[in-house]
Amino acid sequence: MLIGINVIIAATALAIQAPAAPERATLLQLSLAAPKAGAAEHQKAMQEETAKITSCAEGLKLMDRLKARGLHGSLSVAVKTNVPIAALPAPLRDALLMRPIGRATPVFGGSKAFRVLIRCEPTFVIPLPTPLPRQRSRTI
Image 1 (tube, rainbow, N blue to C red):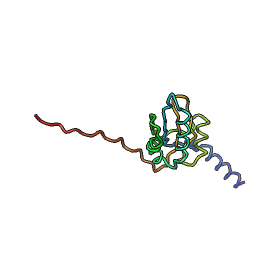
Image 2 (image 1 turned 60 degrees about the vertical axis):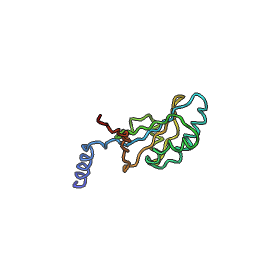
Image 3 (image 1 turned 180 degrees about the vertical axis):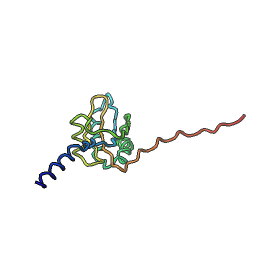
Image 4 (image 1 turned 90 degrees about the horizontal axis):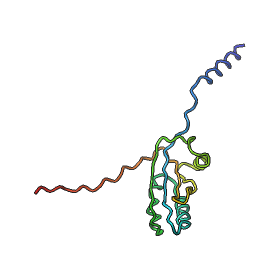
């Protein structure tokens, strides 16, 4: 009888605990604007270069590698913190969760831009923007 009561107490305690918080992550999105001509070449280069990424910090260096390949498209970088993974579209969510942290998803997007997402490692620190050069004011 005592064992039955302990099981009921344990089950009740588990039932009234708050549900587990949904998994959240810092995500790095890299986007390369698709040119009107040569889009397939840009998409292939983006796929090849993002496959080499093993961390978000490395992902930030992607622009240099693309420029070295002669691709001068418009690359943009966005970092979002505390993103609920469950809120992402299922194919994208599954692609992120199937890969180790720091690895890029396959290239996705449409005819306007090629994109990848990277789930950042917990130690990733969002870099501060580069300050604009200060000009000294002269008194006349």
